[in-house]
Image (cartoon, rainbow, N blue to C red; front, side, top):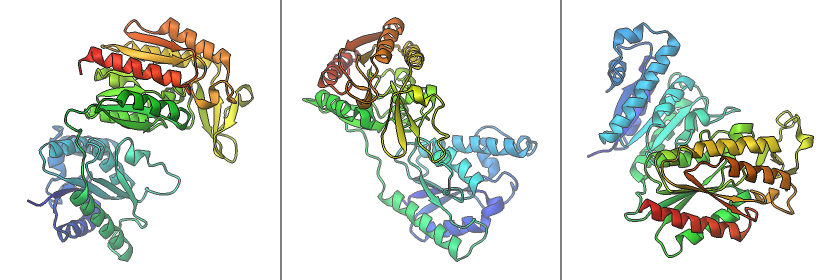
Length: 412
């Protein structure tokens, strides 16, 4: 039985181009499920799923849809696609999904693709996939391939035909050669968060935990996206335990900074009741992007201990009041834990540059962090204070020990 590619296109504006895409996929041996997510012309009837069929997924009638203004139509059709694609995936009716078009179609399609699991083939080709625009709208925390169309998809010509043929061939390659590695039967997967500033201790903790076991580990870069990716995999059921060693994204959630973007960190592991050890790695540091104008830097920069990470990133120690606010937020989130959780706190700096001897070391801020943890830690969390910095082997020894003890209470 041939594999099937779901093709998301607005046939009211892209009919000729969509049929060309379909032919390119068919000639390479795959089947096509053409999904017409038009929001203006609803009567093309060239798709396997018409707009009316899609809307039925969320129980919206044609009459209700036609009575909406343009923004509401777009949002409603997107919501319907977000419901339809997981349904088709669960019913094993599709093996990949792709879309080629402008900004509107790319936004609708990518939001629907984000409902599918990591590893499932997904491609968005858009006129907006280049320039100064961020790829966040297309990718988020999922593995979506993004390909610029170069020319607008407005008619078939040597340029658009080239792009369409190449994108279709890429999708065929993903569907035929791609693979989702299953979790190994009987082996637990431990997720950990890390930055360059915490790499040494994070990796050592994982080595100690895995010694004498068959655990596997996956490390996520806590850069504003990595934490979100970890939590998406927790939601997919692919993670069994968490060493949230680098909670720096919470600092950026509160204060902004270069690694902002991962909101509500910690809550997903608590929701799914996974064994979790939390370390405030990078919690005492904020990083800023250095642009040419300097407008991205804070006005109170002269009050902060700082050091350049590289030519475009500046590391700064947080201030005392900021530290208090951040730790209070961490503790508030931990109060939602339904099962035991452990917090291991290095008392002398939470990243390499804020450790003793580092350019951003500040013992007064560290004291505020420790005292706030002691005051605010909820009853359902165990607090372990370690008289060292995040870089010391003593800390990773304690993290590994605490995680092993914690997993015994979860009856793995």
